[in-house]
Length: 293
Image 1 (cartoon, rainbow, N blue to C red):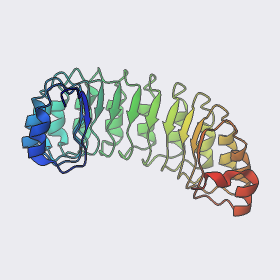
Image 2 (image 1 turned 120 degrees about the vertical axis):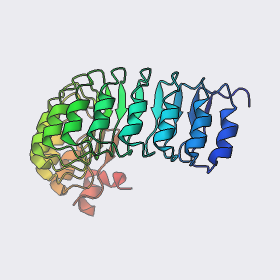
Image 3 (image 1 turned 180 degrees about the vertical axis):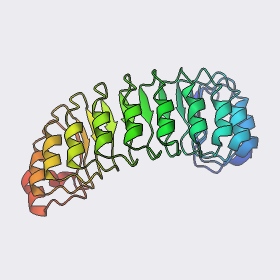
Image 4 (image 1 turned 45 degrees about the horizontal axis):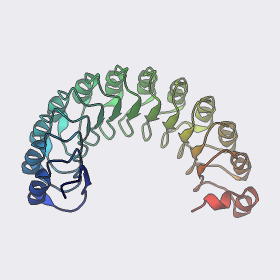
C-alpha cells in the first residue's frame, strides 16, 4: 500500500512484530498505533520513521526508555504519548521536542517537576496533561504557557487556587478543567476567561452560585456543566446563555421548573439533560423527552 500517508491501527494486539511491519511503511506521515503493547522495542522501531509528523502511541508500555527514543523524532509536530507511565524522568526527554505544537501526555504519573518541564515548551498550542497529580503548584507552572489555545487538565488535583492561576492564560479558547476539587470560587475565576468558546467544568462542586458566574460567559458556544449539584435556579441562569449551541447539564438536581427554562434554549443543536429530577410529564410538555437517550 505505497499510497498510504495516514494509518490508524490502534487496539489490534500487533505487538513488536506488527510494529516492525508498520515501521517499514516509509511514506506515512500520520500514525495511530495506540494500545498495542509494542513496548520499548516497538518504540525503537517507530522512532526510526523520520517522515512522521503526527504520532499516537498511547498505552503501549514504552516507559521512560521508550519516551527517550520517541523524543528523537525531531520532525513530529503532534504527539500523543499518554498512558505509558513515563514519569517525570520521561517528561525530561519529551520536553526537548521543541518542534511539537500539540502534546497529549495525560495519565503518566507526572508530578510538579514534570509540569515544570512541560511549561518550558513554549511552542505548544494544545496540551493535555490530565490524570496527573500536578496540583495547584503544577497549575501555576502551566499558566505560564501564554501561547496555549487549548488545555485539557481534568482530574489533576486542582482546586480554587489552581483555577485562579489557569484563568490567567488569556489566549485559551478551549478549556477542560473537569473532575477537580474546585468549588464556587474556582468557577468565579474561570468565568473571567472571556475569550473561551468551549468549557468543560463538569464533575466539580460549583452549585447554583457557580452556575451564576459561568452564565456570564457570553462568548461560550459549548458548555459541559454536568454533575455539579445544580438546581432549578442554576438551570434558569444557564438558560439565559443564548449563544450556546452545545450544552451538557446532566447528572444535576434539575426538576420540572428547571426543565422549562432549558427547553426554551431553541438555539441548541446538542443537549444532554438526562439523570436529573425531571418528571416524565415535564419531559413531554417541554419536548425534552427526545434528549433522553
